[in-house]
Length: 376
Image (cartoon, rainbow, N blue to C red; front, side):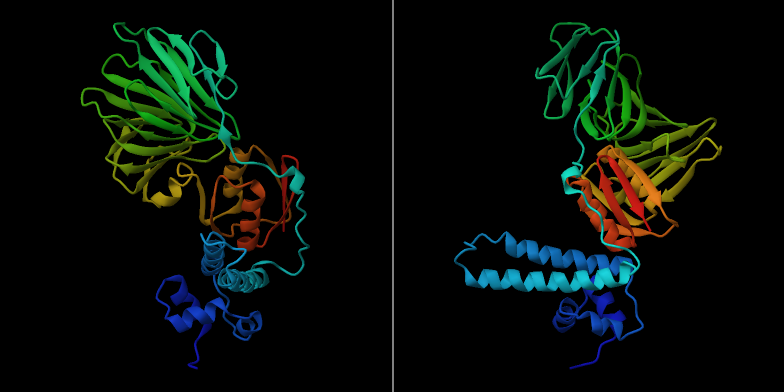
């Protein structure tokens, strides 16, 4: 058999350019064969190999044929499981230091993912818990019907009535999420620990809302009415487009990511026009507006119910995790700026997210109620 370099094998496999023989070698690799080489695969490449073996196992496990009588299927499952075991051994050996003990995981205290939870505050101060109310019609306010349906709050103007403007506030807690369809047809996805303030109807030439936290906007097009989002240190102006705003108080910057169309971002006397695939950053400590090419898939992952980490440091990752699962995070040991890689559904319990981080980042953890301790 031809002699292959380990670095070439993993590079080709990760980039989908491997031959059938190369693919078989990578998926059947024994740990001692890899240790004979001085080559150490990157975190990203190991994650790709590990994830693909999971996909192979999942494919077999969800086969439509009867698993109790189909002998070939069980052979396939066993083979996929063996591949996964080998991949896990490789991953474990190179990403987990020998000095760490096994993870202390209290499964009875595992934390579930965020749910559709939010509180609506009306202009008269009345607070309505949307996750506790069983009524579809939440409130009637100034000729506007406010309804809810499967995690979506909907504003509808009553027929033959003139709406009276009133200010509303939609607030998601840590461990909560919600959506709102505004009276102009604009749809907003609200991430955990976020507050959106807006009128129950838009009157005049501007449509103005304010945001604290994170939200994704699909703004309905109205040529005569500019849509404005006031968040953190900036104001965003659009006529109709799709964009994401991240403006948490525990983050250093306010980030606006444009997915479609164009937006104008202003800070003080300065302003810029953002193009799709770009992100703008503003902060209290700077008068400038920074623009960078961005990773749209990663920036919008939360809206698509995913965690995507691509070289992120553990502190920024755990701020996001803490908001989503409503947990407190503490650290034991020296955590540097190492980058962590991985993709996982946000619907998973927190233990699954921590396991992924452990495989790709040399950490250990324990779960005690809603307290997560990371150890190095």
